[in-house]
Image (cartoon, rainbow, N blue to C red; front, side):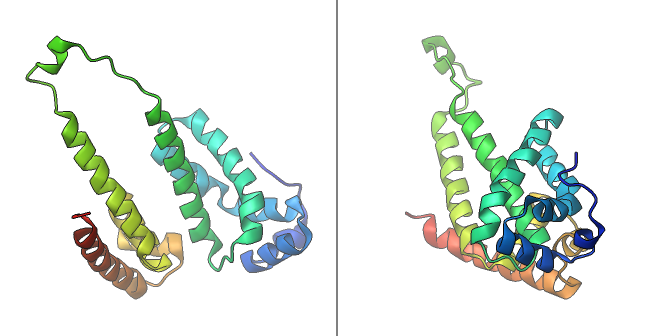
Length: 192
């Protein structure tokens, strides 16, 4: 999977220069060079969430199409981290859409079954997840990315550092502060 032809002059540029070049010209070849650097990581994120190789390949293509529009309007300082968040959010959207259309047939005998888990439990869990998602959005970008990678994707400190480009102290600080801020926000919003 490649989006561009070989153009050595464009490929030598760093991420910031490629973003600036794309925003100025709208040249998809420039965007393709930038995306190709991280496409394998996007595929990995998609495969991690979607658990299906073909669906993940499709997602990689769809994320590129989203990137064509979103990169023009967002101010991106760390492209790799921003793209990771964009990819994760895309996959979560796909998973939510897919789960909305599943139907379950309930019969009286099924409802009275002792193995049946009460529906209120799912509502409570969904409410908690919704509160957590809203609280994640209140964190700074560094905290949100670090907490997501460390707790939700179960990456170690070094992996978080490698994926984000943050030094180890910043990663540890972001995770610690992000966890504290997330806990405060969740406790504050759980009663609503």
